[in-house]
Length: 390
Image 1 (cartoon, helix red, strand yellow):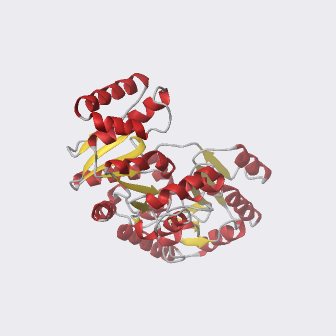
Image 2: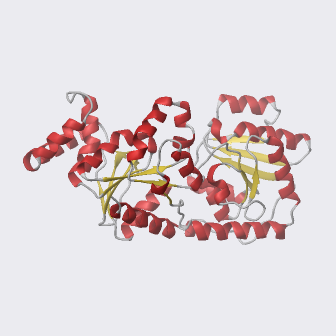
């Protein structure tokens, strides 16, 4: 089995890098393709990296594959050039050829596209006998096609022709079906974690003198931070002692709202910081708050559950597939600041023994559903299913 994984960038997200290493270790022959944005060295002989970088590198790669095709597969080169929708004498064609030429040259059995927005560019690979698998993640399904009707039309045109979809949750698969994705071709493969990297705090005291609340994520409206801040104002008015930290960057709207609500001394916003520090801050916090309006299954929730930090989350997207309210975390409705404030207070009133039970069940959920070895096995099974299907 030969699979090309295109994630747009090398190295990619932690999830995709775990998948790459795990699949290679499990014997899958991988072709890793994308723009090189940092240092990465894969030790496995099952991984071939053919990324591209700056202008001179692109020219060299384009020349290399043009010569290879011309000498050995001129017919394939002509067919490939005919697939380009615009004129070939342009920088745009050069960039397109650098991305697509190596894939056609190596001709994997499966091309796995990690980010949905790029699907229109890659669906033509089916003309060369390559199966297409598309991952469904977050805003590229939940938000982008709502804000961009052209993108929605692209999804409706292309989705019916995709060979298979990888969804991070059942909820995101249902969302994709609105744009023509065949439910029978959608398989859920949960994001996987190396649990050795997320040690569980067996015993953890909940600090009720100043409840430490943390959120992690970029300052996008779908993250619901405006509702979280309104909840913090309610907690302040109720004289509940807390400190709220948002990691992921700021925006004018958030800064204004914090000042307008008189929360300057109670809320801290930090830019993106190294992942190890993020883990330390999550571990040190009493509550991980996810106030989002929509999600697939956010990695930060999985990470907090693995580390043993209580999660309070809106019941958005696939979150309900990993959290059972009161059992392995706590759920509130979306867009409901008062419900968030009430839930934080309710959590703080629980005994440490009660909270430890929730924490242990959340860790057990992660071990059962989100171990990286299960992710690799499930993805490999998806690939096998695609190759067996017509």
